[in-house]
Image 1: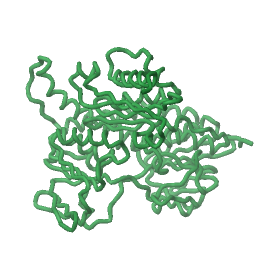
Image 2 (image 1 turned 45 degrees about the vertical axis):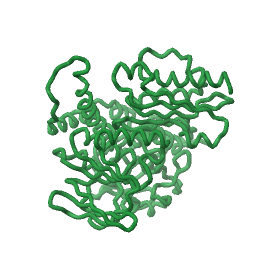
Image 3 (image 1 turned 60 degrees about the vertical axis):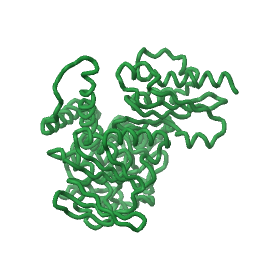
Image 4 (image 1 turned 90 degrees about the vertical axis):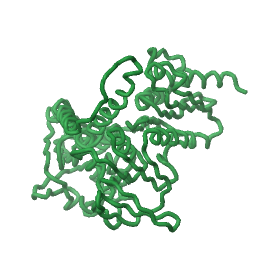
Length: 467
């Protein structure tokens, strides 16, 4: 039987997307709710994540697009970057996003109390947390949405290495930069600063960038990076130590027994995300973590502690803002006795605002080919009208469908507006559209999503005419 929400006091830890929507859901259900956040309302997404990063990426794209002006008969001077002015614009955007967010007013209107900038809360028992200043907050149900932090490597001299957060806060553009990590965050750092004129060397310990994506997509992104002058070192070996040099920082690494040295003005590590379980006091509250250090949860966000739930990055699942929002909603619903089923887990779009841009939803090709009843088609941007108009013909759209049911199983895109194109595929998948239905859906013309429509049409043609 569902618990009466009004009888249950809910404490939400964290003011990012997961925490905000958990608090809003709990308050909407009538529970006395308190949202406590270590920093500003909005969390990393608004202050150190998608909002500032996308602003910097937009500036990088403007720099790139300026090079096209002469092709379209527009004469102007060589663009130069005023980085302090750009940082001012980033601050303006972050401030405006926070100020214009209706979520803060909605939460307070629903009756929730918001406590900002209290510092990192630590559990002292299963119902109580304490702040660095000694404030105590308690709840009958607690939802942990405290996010994560950049992973630190146990390597001598690592204290000289910056995190991606440090990179976004630089006051000047460095002449040279070492970026460690070939995942989404490392690629964003490398892409943005390369556009700003930094000489970037990107190190990836694995055999290739973007190990979770298809080889052809990863190869296209790597090729695009190299075309822009980024030096990529895949399977580089292992890092031995860092040390201060005359002009910045030296990274000593070894490969097949041979030691090598890379030097740059700045080194940035983007080797993943982690949760500081000890700092949060998770064990005190009886909260179990997995082998990676993330909080273990079920499909409703329940942890091993009966009254504690978790959502967002602390769970180590899909560490993206839209998924954090959904997880926060589910956790608050379950905490108050109204468990709801997760929806469209197969249609979670992922991607990054790099240059070239890339994105995917659903299965990649390697996953799909484990099932013999699939058909895959790829369409080059060079064959689509809008990319030709815009002079952005680099890239492709790959679409995967089941031969029998004609359901769309996955879509991968590399090239301009890749993230936007994949959103269309994600909605189609969530609505369980067949590939032939997508093929005949009347999209506007010409749009970048036209490349997806072409892929759907080609796939439908092949399905209708089996060899």
